[in-house]
Amino acid sequence: MSSADSQLASKFLEFSRQKLLGQYWPRLRQSVESLTDVQVWWRPNPASNSIGNLILHLNGNVTQWLVDSFNRDEDKRNRPAEFAAEGGLTAAELLAKLGATLERAAQVLDRLTIDELLAPYEIQGYHVHGLDAVYQVVEHFGLHYGQIAYITKSLTSRDLGFYKELSKTGRAD
Image 1 (spheres, one colour):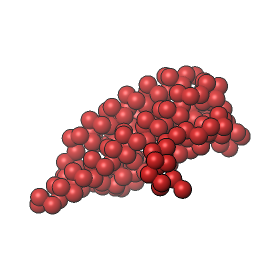
Image 2 (image 1 turned 135 degrees about the horizontal axis):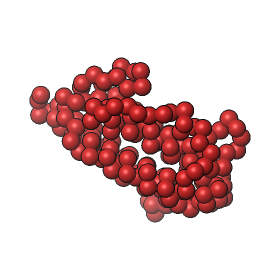
Image 3 (image 1 turned 90 degrees about the vertical axis):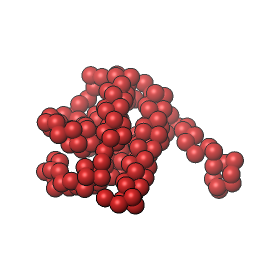
Image 4 (image 1 turned 180 degrees about the horizontal axis):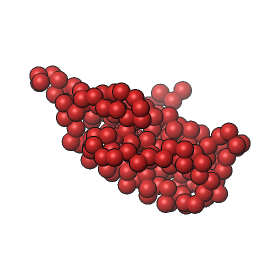
């Protein structure tokens, strides 16, 4: 592989890690820490997911697509159970579980090679390359973190302050 390939892979992994672990995860955690356990498991209707379901779902997704796939571990995910849950774990327990999974994901992101990013994988019945798997996890996490932030704002009627630094620059307007 060329030096440019190596630099590109390094930049991609660095940015993926920063978005997932440096931006989305702290904001998701902050959103959930402001809620009660009842609020975490609240659903607006039977067709919608609670924050608890979304956290279980993110945990399953990160484990399956990033941790187990790149570690070549057996896929033990039970995706339907992520959405069927109606409680059983506190907000703190849900965050601890996802936090531990993200620590394992960080270890994977820290050691991935160009060959692993270009290698084929079969994940959840999809034929993808390692690059696709990393991108899918980051994009998917961002989507559901946004839902969790929205639900939190709806339940608490307050701004979460994630972009308060933009007010100082004039970019918030």
